Length: 195
Image (cartoon, rainbow, N blue to C red; front, side, top):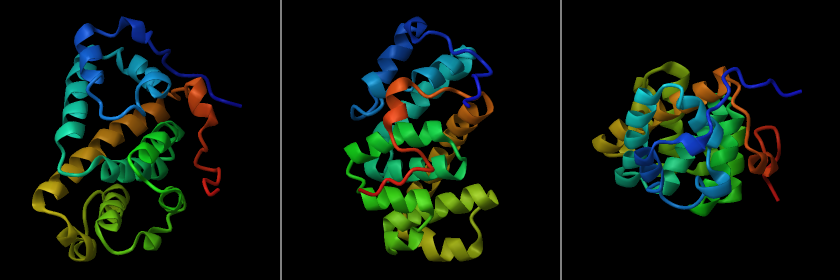
């Protein structure tokens, strides 16, 4: 049985024009149309000062970040796993596929089989994400093993992207934000993604 939302989302038809303009700049198509996270946006609309500033930061960083869109999705999906956020996970599986994340990589992110990601940038992004979530810092060993694979700018941006998805994951979990109907067809955290 699904828990009803704790805060009813406001209708996205009430989004301010400047917010709509910001959202049109999101790269790709996965978070637009049927994939749009209407319910979390509608929930955050209850705090318009927060939502407006956050939307601009969120979309602008996606456009300008040193990480590729594919690498960003690796981090975001791992955040969905670590925070047990079905909402983040299901919304970003189609986005990740759009930006070239293979099914085997999706499965590795979901199950935690990080060794299968190799020892390059993909693994560094995910390992450092795990480190930040699990330990609230980057320990010396993780720093030695993984931070050297990224530039100082990228490590700073990684922390910023983790922080963005802490907001999304906690909002979705704490307020029991309901998945939109199209997202129910996307395999969840307990479902195998393997063909």
